[in-house]
Each structure stands twice: as C-alpha cells, then as structure tokens.
Amino acid sequence: MLELGAGLGLPSLAAALRGADVLATDWADEAVELLRDNAQRNGITVRAARVRWDEPARLLAAAPWDLVLLADVLYEQRNADRLLELLPQLGGEALIAEPGRPFAKRFLAHWDVEEVADRVYRLR
Ligand SMILES: C[S@@+](CC[C@H](N)C(=O)[O-])C[C@H]1O[C@@H](n2cnc3c(N)ncnc32)[C@H](O)[C@@H]1O
Image: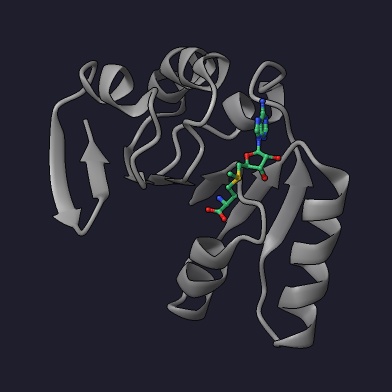
C-alpha cells in the first residue's frame, strides 16, 4: 500500500505492524527521515520516499496500488486539485482521514464516499 502526504506516517506504521507492505511518501525530506528513524527505532519495516504529487512517476510505475492512505492533506485548494488528478491513476481504493478542512467538501463530492470510521472515508 501507499501513503501520500505521510508526515509522521502513523497510518503507515500501523498498517506495517499489521503486515502490510508499505511505501510512505511525503515531499518534505525531514518527514521522510523522521518516519524512517521512527520505524527503525520501533522495529517496523516501512519504505519511505520523498515524492511530490506533481512528480508522481515513481508512484505511477508501481500502480495499481491495492490501497492508498491519506490523512489531513486537504488544507490547501492546490492539494485537493493535485490529488483529484493523481488518485485515479494510482488504482485500488483510497482511505482518507479528513478532519474538516475547508477544501474537503468539494474534493469528496468527486467520489463515491463511504464513511468507514469517524471522519475516515473510503473513496471509490
Ligand atoms: C497536514 S500534514 C498531515 C501529515 C500526516 N498525514 C498527518 O495526518 O499527521 C500534510 C502533509 O502533506 C505533505 N504534502 C503537502 N503537499 C504535498 C505534495 N504536493 N506532495 C507531497 N506531500 C505533500 C506535507 O509535507 C505534510 O507532511
């Protein structure tokens, strides 16, 4: 599975602990380094890479992904726009944790949405 905008990458770490083969990505070097360090310190196997949503070649080469995870990534309109373009190319299903950012409503309107947990939505 793939996480986009992972930051500290807690969903990736949790999924890896449950046996998933995970690539966690973010465009911030510091986030990727911290995630690798955190995983290593806790004995968790997670791949982490610096990937921007507007330069997704590495992600597209590995598509289709079984599952794409996102958490709190819709805080800017440009994020919503880029993800609307990128996500359909990644395949599989997507789960997004969305705490109520202003750009979420318009983003979610593009999908068949099922709330699978509190503020966690499955996108198809
Ligand atoms: C609000 S943080 C959420 C981090 C984490 N998912 C969480 O829930 O704690 C948004 C994350 O998206 C990343 N991000 C924003 N725009 C991005 C882009 N264009 N490409 C890749 N990562 C991006 C940021 O670096 C940041 O780590």
